[in-house]
Image 1 (cartoon, rainbow, N blue to C red):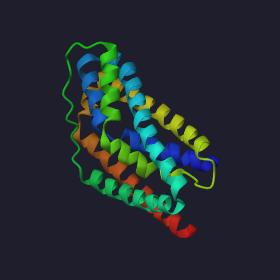
Image 2: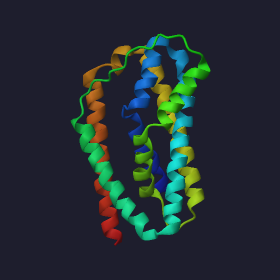
Image 3: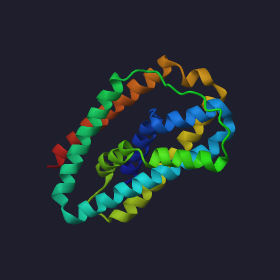
Image 4: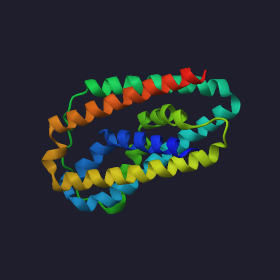
Length: 208
């Protein structure tokens, strides 16, 4: 794996993680209701959930790559189209982050488990990994070293992102609930997703 590939993956992952979704909504809800103390257990739960979803996706991708390089290439094209579609959908989405404060008294372990379940069992998450990861995997190189580096990078960024969202939500509540601010995040994220999908298509065309 080249440094450029890793940097591209890290940058794309960081951008995609910032975009609000069900997991971020849950993190913000707990932080709004119970403050900064929710940050660590929620971040750990999110990282574990992403690890679960990513593992399931990678098992499928590994089997697919072993079975047929052609089908794996087709999946890359489909994944690029999915990223463009996701970007368009995100661009057209509203800016409101409907996070209601959770004031119910729950233990640290329960918060962690809740974040893990919401993240791991979100079918969109698994679909996203299946579409996203193949764009950076070199089918001619060993799969497992690439997977190890990508997984470690993504999980570290997922932990940092959830932790930061929880801290911001607990300290600056109006910022995360401001439709204009969230609208900007969605439009920037959507634009970058569309750009990533188009760039991937261009790369595939130049390599063919």
